[in-house]
Image (cartoon, rainbow, N blue to C red; front, side, top):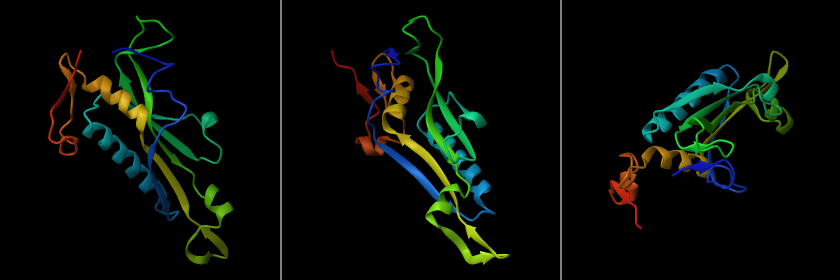
Length: 171
């Protein structure tokens, strides 16, 4: 099935999301941020989406208060761009990982460790990862899992699908 940008599962007004949120010590936050990105990559691979890329968000496009942001973009082989059925397959954002440093914790007074370090308040760093934006991830999965017979279920999800390997198409 071909998907169009508008009127597709990818871009909807409301969706469910499962997020990771980490409060980290400032000395460990960047290591944890790298681990968060690696975990998101592993998650995407476990779903059988092997055509993806990790892209750093340009500084001018960072959300307010963010220090750094990475996107995991999945390949949508059948996505129609701009209404042109001949358009090439495109990569679209499916997961976002953001490092907010201590921007959010300062306004919320979220501190870590001792109340003061070298005479200054020690604020926790905050990290966020939108691990599962339901419609974006689902639409990417459907594009990767479909076959001529139906939707192939990746092995990691089969225990939750009554060990079903395939959801057959019906006419």
